[in-house]
Length: 427
Image (cartoon, rainbow, N blue to C red; front, side):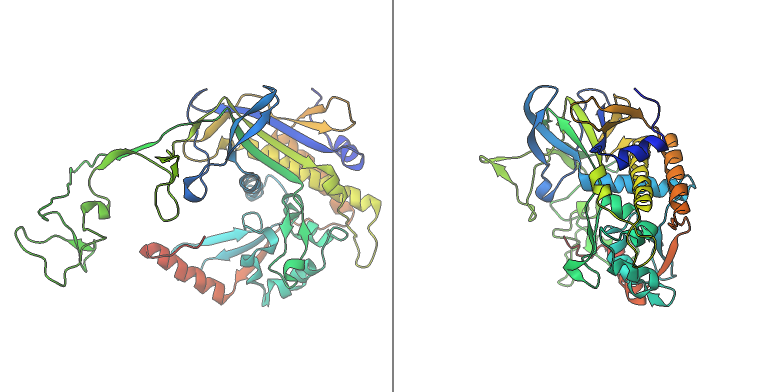
């Protein structure tokens, strides 16, 4: 294995004909081989299962998706956000803060955690000074960006150029700027064997349902929201039970009978397979594999004129593309440094070292580079310093926005609904 990747080698790779940088990492469950892992669930409690070709076995095997491309992108962006907040990396960030007194809790959203990055509706409906962001000098630049002139996006939100962005809610609608993902990552479990999941709870107070109604709970205008009838008393016509039956479990009291969880549709009806309910219980796997690729041709398609109306110069293009490549490698390294705790009961531990492979000349073995997060950060800093010398801004100070009154009020009312438990969440 070669020494850690340096800036000269990165420039050569980006400026040459290499296809991609690739990092393949194998994992086992943190509990050890054979321990159960729980993938993400989709509508109806479904897991994303399929058969894939396994090069280690030379055959197709049953697999389950443990972390999607979209989820992996979010994890890399959050790793960059953490590193930026702690001062480890320089990075342009657009931020909007919701900190008014009427909020149940304060919120800050940035271009690194907004779902649609710089084109997100949260930023669109916020102000830069006294002007709506998209009508401000900075925001208007997004109306003209494309692959031939990506400079404004490079200066405002370079992560959008590696994780992808579609400005579909901007002034041009579906014709808005669209950039493909340059970095793609996912985690897949191989030889996936489904299991079952049980649920139960023992109430330490021993609260029980009484068929005679002595423990039936009724709605009440009190601090806890319910009351009991006097023993032997009959409910009046105006008395309303809590929930459907007034059982203590409506307020999360009482035991939960041990049971097996089954897949249900959106109406909570059991989903059957050949007449049998389908259990939801995670999987055991032989191994998990995380594959991350950074496409260099995707970066070479981007051009960066440094002055309005001018054609991009090769030197400026090469510098900006190198900085983006360094940013992608840094995102991958920082996310791996943060660990692989994907969700409850799905923590993975790496069994192979983190190393990037450069896919260059056809037929040649890829050159491998170890790239720990510390080295990736230095690589990014060096690339950014050169980009600034060529006239690119790459500011490390956030572009701070303020939410519009309408957006703020929408958040306030939504928080109140969530706190009351009466919200009707949309798909």
